[in-house]
Image (spheres, rainbow, N blue to C red):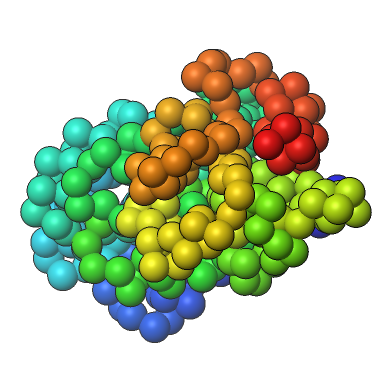
Length: 297
């Protein structure tokens, strides 16, 4: 099993770096200071964190006001409550005027809901936010990549949505090209399942099948300049994500592939809650699923 590291702590550490760099950066929380492990940051910068309570729509509107006044807000909440309860405000009052607001959603994916249960497992957020015009959509590979994505969001003009995990997230590597064994298959993934993709790639190599694993941390817009040459060379295209297969990374890849893509993810169902390893195994979002997809090809 991969070493674990918290994407939430990585977010807070990177946000503090931005606090020190730019006094316009503020955090707008929808009862999520504790969720994002930001208690110490709040003590250190009490005037830079706005706590709105359990009111995601209000948090977005407050952030819109702050952005209109020249601030650079980072809105923090559970991924599903942000993208489902407040998507109308995100669309109309942030996307339409193209305000410079960054949204970070925690507990993204099925594997993040072990402690809170099925109401706090969110596997629709990428599909929702990909459909909102003007938004850049990020899906970090792991904790270290989350820190990089906090800074990338800062540097990206306009609204950005980024999903992060549970706080117990596998470390996969510091470069998006995670394995480069060959062109029998190209495996494109985001988030925690990338550790399974890498495990599968190593096992497949021992079986004489050579694949490439690429982490896709920008889901919208896809980097076609990087992806299309790799896709053209690969005999088989596979995506893996902790998300519904409808609308997420797999859907985005299908839109540019022009050929069949095997999508590994939740097959348009509501999963149970449980530990990450149990859930990945039960719903076939693991190394075995990748190995099966490659060998069956």
